[in-house]
Length: 357
Ligand code: COI
Image (cartoon, rainbow, N blue to C red; front, side, top):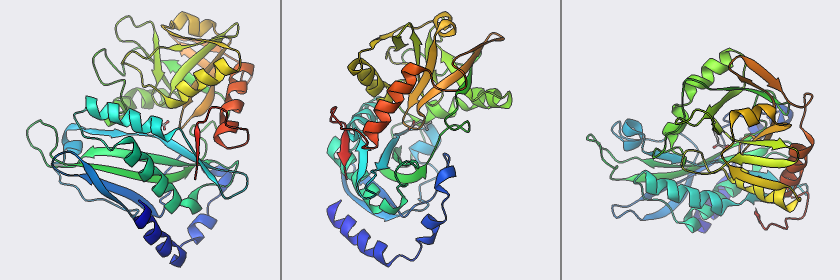
């Protein structure tokens, strides 16, 4: 990435489009795409090795109508965030090698070649640096980073695509839910399931996200923020929300569904577990029942996009249970503060999780 980055900085200093950045209302960005300057594109050759990635102007891409990703959903994505430090200059990435590793395991499941951890991290760094002016000011949000891995080679019969593209684009973002930082209202999904044992629920394949749109849109039309999925075998254990993992707190004990192939192994999930233990809390990864959920003191969600979001109510079989009084519970607030201070460079990173750009 070094050479292409130098080239792109040269282009940037001649750029006359900085007005678009100036036009952003940083206090109300929400979570929608704002086109930026550059994206990173890297293709693999026929023996499955990725090489010669480069920064290109952000824009549409051309693929065959018969691309594997379009016809059979052979695709993966990742989600990461970069924060601007208070000095206004330095940018922090959070555990990028974790996303790289997760993409590699997803690629294995989806029969795709994947970039090495180094290639992935270098591509992310180059993309963030090339779009540095789009990283929101400290305290106003983050630059959301979206790496994609797609079967872009043409297929007709069902088979792995003969060619793959790794692409990284970015967009400045604020709060994920329209509630902002206010607690979200979830409904336990009783008809649809997100994942099955032996399926792809444990990897970040694009089809998992298309599959949850129906339940999500029904829930939204009824005024809920999103749905919470139950396991498809017993219809009793918590799995996850469409876009995030779930935690409950009862008498200071923190519990979250264990990773067993049907839930996405969230990097924020894993980090919150470590932060909580460092803060002296007991954390259990295990089967968590709906009954426990309804009796919890606090419920919260974790994810890169949602960060740590308090849950204000859960509706299940027509019964609504509320938590907190319109804000964070004490445990989730503490975890939120410790994690985000570290991610934003406001506290010392004694976990060694941040990468300074
Ligand atoms: C993320 O949290 O980064 C995700 O990838 C979830 C997505 C549905 C926004």
